[in-house]
Length: 194
Image (cartoon, rainbow, N blue to C red; front, side):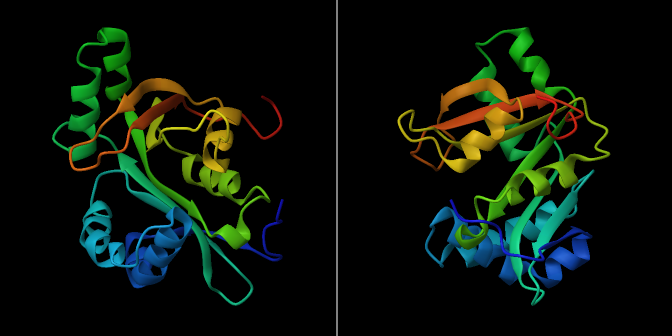
C-alpha cells in the first residue's frame, strides 16, 4: 500500500478555479482512470458545462509543489440532465422506492486520485470535504461494476462509507461497460464512527 504524498493540502475550488486548472484536472482524471489522453479534449467541454449547474462544488488535493494530485466535484441532480435521465431509465421498473433516490440528491460526478497518491486515505478526505455542508438528502454516483475477486480502491471506499446499491449492471448509452449506481443518505458520519 502506498501512502499519500506528504504535505497534501485540501482545497475547495470555485468554478473559475477549476476552469483555470482544467487541463491539469483532466490529466488526473485520465491517469487515475487509465483512459487515453485523447479523453482530455473530449471531456473538457462537459466539465466546463458542469460548473454552471445548480449546487456545483469542487475540491482538490495539492501537493507541496501546488500540483493537483486528486479532485472531486458534483452538483445537484435534476430532471433533464443526461445522467439523471439515464439512471431514471434504469430504475423505471424498480418501483417507487428506488425512484425516490432521484428526488433530492447530490450527484458525485467525479472523484479521482493519482495512482502515486492512492492508498493513504486521500479519496475519503476529498469526498468528505466535498460533501460537508451539502444540503441534499442523499448522494448518488456511478462507477464501473466491481470485480468481486478484486474490488477497486474506489469500491472499497464507497462500501466503507455506507454506499448501497441503487442500480447494478446498468449500461449507459454510449458506453458498453456495465456500471453500478450507488447511493447513501447525507450527511456522512464523522470518520471512524461506521
